[in-house]
Image 1 (tube, rainbow, N blue to C red):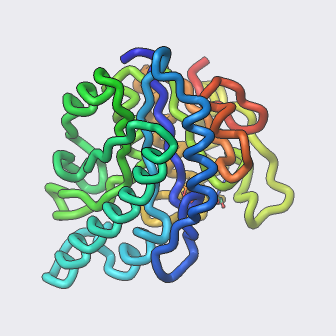
Image 2: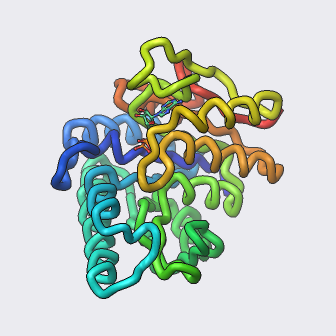
Length: 270
Ligand code: ADP
């Protein structure tokens, strides 16, 4: 695919992740959409957007346990309601993107994804390819999905990004989160945590050990999950560059889409 970038915006950025009820950070969403619109050059790049669920997903999933599987009718209802909530958030996100002049088209991953024990094993990408080829910007999002072992598991944006990067030959994956990058420990809890500027084949395993203890695990694996997904992809030999940046700081998304990283973590093969 022509110069494809995959930009994932964390649920903790566009929503208030700690709110008990679903709540969008509208101001942040507008600012990020404007940055994307400024950086997106339709003639020289292709773009896929993915967003997380934040308070539209984590609370209901934690409460009902559907990420671990479905055992009763109540959980089936929760599966359906969780999906509906994700669609609601996606509608808000795409509305703002379209208002900024971006041809953002929703793609519901769970209508054709198959999971197995929490891992994405199959997802058709022909439609996404077609959308990109005519100039649309597919917008995917974390969703509850059919799982052939446990009936339901969560297909996170963090899993979708590397899957699509491999299938569609993306040049880069950008993770816009609410911290400056990957640190030696959780920077929200450890004031002495240091930013790791680069993760590569030489320090993969060391980083894995370090993060194993530090991660604030949410239902989709948190920062640890994000990094592991990318490392696994690189270990398979997929040559994509991934960056983790702070999407809460103005200008970072625009810079990253233009290939300029002032502060963040780059993950690549070396
Ligand atoms: P998103 O919603 O953007 O996908 P997550 O909530 O999944 O983001 O992960 C980001 C959070 O991970 C940060 O807010 C941070 O508190 C936490 N975290 C835990 N360990 C680390 C670490 N070693 N480096 C950076 N962030 C970490």
